[in-house]
Length: 445
Image 1 (cartoon, one colour):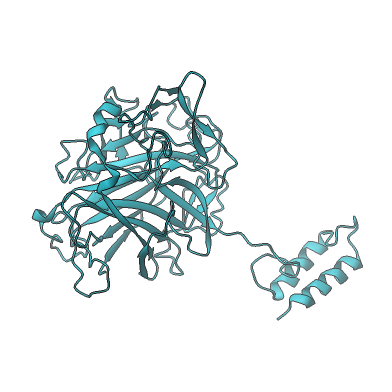
Image 2 (cartoon, one colour):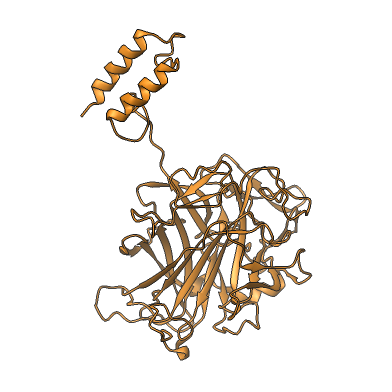
C-alpha cells in the first residue's frame, strides 16, 4: 500500500474556523429520511485494520480479528473513550446483527447534505485535562483499488483522503460555536480501496493513528479540556479552556461545560476528499482523476457503557453505566453536517441539517425503534480515544520521571530541607534520609 500523508496542525488557542446557527435547525432529520442511506450489512465486506504512526510513517495492515469492535491497542496506550464500531444498538434484538454504516454520495458540490465533501461532526463529553495519544476511526468505500506490488493490500487510491478534526469547548449545535477552539487536524491521503470488490459492495477499514512522536514539530498528542495550564506532556492544548466559570460569549452557559453535565465538551469531525479535488503532495497538481469518484460511508457505533433496554411500556432507552471501561460520556443520537470548506476563507458553514437516525431524541425515547424493518442506527460516528498508560513510580524514583539518578537525590534533599516526611512516621528526621537512601540503593543502576 502506497499511502501519502499530510499533517496539518491547527494552532491551539486561535479563533475557530467554523460557524453555525445558534439553535438547532428545524430540519432535524429522523429515521424516515435516513432509511434510504443505510448500507445493508450484506453489502459491507471484510474489515482491515490499519495502524499508522504520524512520527515515522510506519503503516501496518492486518485483518480485523473476529469480534474486534474498536481500533487496536498500540501497546503503550489504553482505551479511554469509545463508540464501538461493529455492533449497533439493536444487536441481538429481532435478529439484528452486524455493522451499521451510513452511505455518503460521491458528489462534492455541497448542495446535498449527504455529499461526501461535507464535514460530519459528533460531540461528546470527557473529564477535563484528558491526554490523548492515539485515535481510531473507520470508513467503507466503493473505490476499486489495485495491488501492483502483490502484498495483498491495495496500493491506495490517488486523491482519495479524509480530514479529521478535534475541537475544545464545543457541544455540536446546542449553542453557538463562539467558544470552539481547534486542537488538531489530520489529513490522510491515498486511502486504500477494495481489491476485487463486487459492484455495490464496500470495503471496510478500521484505522488506529498513533499521534506521538519524538519530534515536537510532528507530535500531535493533545490534551482535551486543559484547566490548569499543564499539558501533562501533550504537544497541543488550549491553555485554561477547561477551567469552569467562564462565559466569554455571554450566552448563559459555562464555556467549558456547555450542557451543564459536569464534564468538558468536545467535538470531532470527518470529511472525505474525492480524487481530482486536492493536492496532497504540494506539487501544484490535483491528485487523482475526478472521474474516479466513488461512494464512501462512515460506520456508526454503539457507545461504550450504553445498553439498550425496554421498559414495561415497550419504550426503548439507553441504560448507561458510567463506570464501564472507556465509557463514551456525552454522546448524542444526532450528528450535524457542515458544507465543504469555503474555497476562499476556509470556513466550515453548517448545512442546515442535523440527522437523528435512531428512534431517540435527546431525553425523548421513541417506541419500537428495533422492530423488524424499522431499525436505523443512532447517528453516532464510531470513534476511539486512547491515553497513555500510567505507571507506578518505584520508591527509588523520587521525582517519578522513570529514571533513578542524581535528580531523585537532589529533589529529595530539597523537600527534606522543607520538612518532608519520607517514611510517613509523622516526623522529618534522620530516619527519612536513611529510608530514602536504602530505597535509592535498591534502584540505583
